[in-house]
Image (cartoon, rainbow, N blue to C red; front, side, top):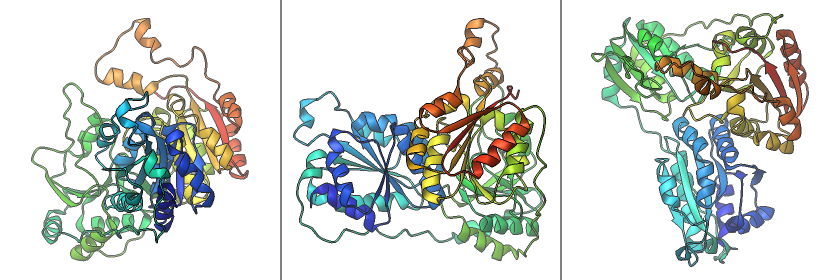
Length: 512
């Protein structure tokens, strides 16, 4: 067995049985080893697809997937979606092939400072330069990735460590994750602080059980229940507690927190604005607001919430069921798009939301849709939606709905090819308004308003007009174009009834 085989055996022994790969020369022994390994390899045409897919896989399954990247440039190409994974606290095991140890000093064209690129992810990093160390290092990477909290672990594998022989033996097992206990002092502070002028702010991975516990605590204490703007994944729909979501726009979010004297953080960071704006506060809470951390970002929220529910004497509550909206007809716009999604959404779907300005009404519209899970853009680096949908589909084996704005879609369209190749059940709604509308909105918010055609042209995606359906077909995905609300409903229902991927190009006006 060589070092690559030892690495693959260690991955498989620890349940890391999917690798999203964009390999090069330095990784060929790993690739060859896949023939005999119990690891599924998914080819991605761009590293940002591989890293985003690993993020989506982790969000849905709660387990790490591996990536296979080629040297420093490959890691750099995948960095933006690793940033999103870092913000989601997704467990990801990056395997980055490197030059042979004796080749590195020659400064070959692909030589770079891989450690510097990886260190910016604020995760775990090591370099395996001896074949005998590879399995041990791989187990350590898995332990580091799983946490808690989850994080990105990067293992750099020298080519000669990969091809050199090792003594065969049992694959090392990663240390089991150890969730920290509930801090008694923090718990007592939370109990004292909760009341009518307080709130609980949730974040991270939120299932229906955790949400119901939080709802019970708020019902017992009179506190408000809130959720960060961009949670990693949250269960939603009829019969699921629905927290108040922090509004993206700081000007409005500040009003949400204006009357809150005490804020309890459960899996969420202290709330701040997405960007700085002239004459707008960056911190969303008042300076005199008491902020208490019960569990930090990326931590398991179920245990602390159960402890807090017991400490507050929280009783069971009835959660509204409600009905989804009726199918919309007529013009296609942001409101009717949201209604169409909610009216047709089947139970069990995983939603990857990168709809940006076109999706302003989505969350409210889907309040009473059948139960589903919703993933958001945790780190703000666009181009996450299609890759995350790939990983979610591989992890879940169920239908994934990717709601994708046109500008963001063009960052990682290669994901469509992987969807077709793997025959993944992904429905993509490509929202074509022909404009970088979010940038236009932000320009006005920061006060940089100009009327010159030069600045206007930087937000215009209509010259030439994008053919998103044609792009999808060129990558092997069935596609159609819709211009009305009822056409969108029909196309969504057809896609849900058809195996494999579908792209629906939805042409609609700019929302605002």
